[in-house]
Image: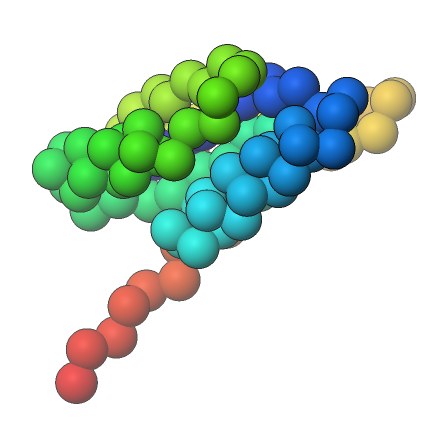
Length: 106
């Protein structure tokens, strides 16, 4: 399961930029990877793990702005199409993101 965090945060004032930076750093510290500027993703091994991640994000929400979290199955995430550049030549779209790095326990 993948947790996708999407957000629009105000950044006009210095304090707002600080809140936005702290929020992004929190996402990275929790193991999220940036997909786009305001879209971050994290692989969660179960729905309970995803709920824990959501609660962590909820506890660190900036005072203003909008944050959404979507949960996708691994198959749904894998079926995502990624396009880069303005003009696409047929067959050049990138399907599937890199799989998450596996945690090794000894």
